[in-house]
Length: 153
Image (tube, rainbow, N blue to C red; front, side):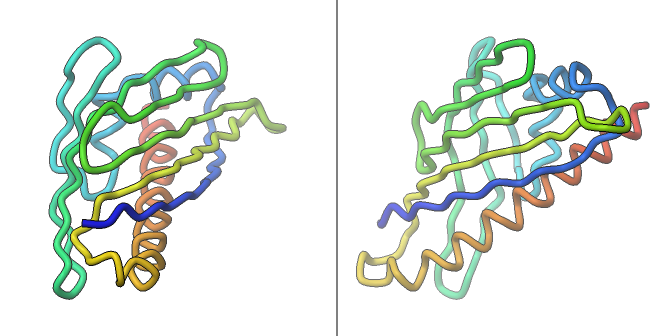
């Protein structure tokens, strides 16, 4: 097993006020279900959730993310999370801000380390695949959130 780090940031423009966007993001159980490849999310306490991802396969490498995150919000413009346990160490934030035209600019910043089942010698080869995968998932997540908030009107 080898810990492989990835980092990405994604911004999406949402046709809704910042307070509504932040409230949606802070509803972890609802919002998490929009994450591509999520098998389930389980509430452990008021601010702690377990994420279990569907198995992903790339050639001979199979991986199922299973990790616990603790969340916090400042109630104004930011939702943060940090890793508590599991095979993915995830930290990051969503920040929301009003933008011209009555829309919200929402940016997600994510830093992950996943304990992938690859020998240490293959870390340099596996990292670009992991980075591409994380970028794709976060892009899809941000777009799913935008669609869900806008559809709710």
